[in-house]
Image 1 (cartoon, rainbow, N blue to C red):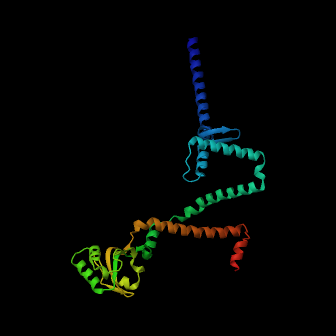
Image 2: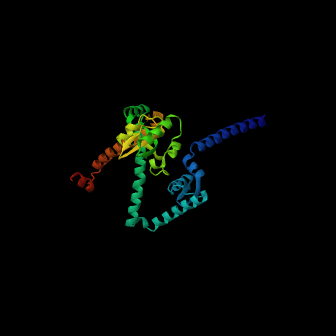
Image 3: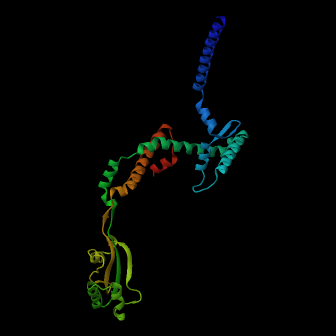
Length: 291
């Protein structure tokens, strides 16, 4: 009986101590500094007073010239080298040098200015699809590709020769062959023709030429026209009629334009506000406004 009671007491105290241990274990988990633990786990190099993580290495990589290729080990070595040289420079007081301090201030301002732009300007320049579409519909001329033509041409002082070439075209003969078969003495520089204009905007052509070819279809030729004492035949090798670009095809371009325009306006307004807040005496600005 006595033994049984002692066993009961022993099990009772075991349950109590088990509960205490569980409580302490849970308390330990609840009070863990997960930020420090995460930093500990992501640390690539640790030293006295500093830790280099993968994020530090990524930032160093982002500062390298575009297209510069290097290994992860080399990046880590470069990151450590910069950290050690920087710490030693501070120990020696080099950061107090006037020129170095000035460069540090410029770098400091640049980084913070980029952060300010990212957090306070970029979020303000989101433009909805409805606004983009409205701009597109109100500015159709900006998204219209003018008609273009690719002409072959030949000149002669003899109108009849060119009219014969036109007749041959209407009969289904090839323009180049008709030019080659024309009488040599009737077409100057016979080894050169027919000449090509390449692709040309119709609205940029001289008026007489534009009027002569504007209605000509691909594979046909305009009636002979006279310029500077010679007659010309223009053959339509190819043409592209005026085209209005579709909204989906220009949406990205419109958004880039409108975003940049809006950011310029925001930047100007913010600068004016900050100049007033920090009482800036801008000599350059004052000189420009008093001209």
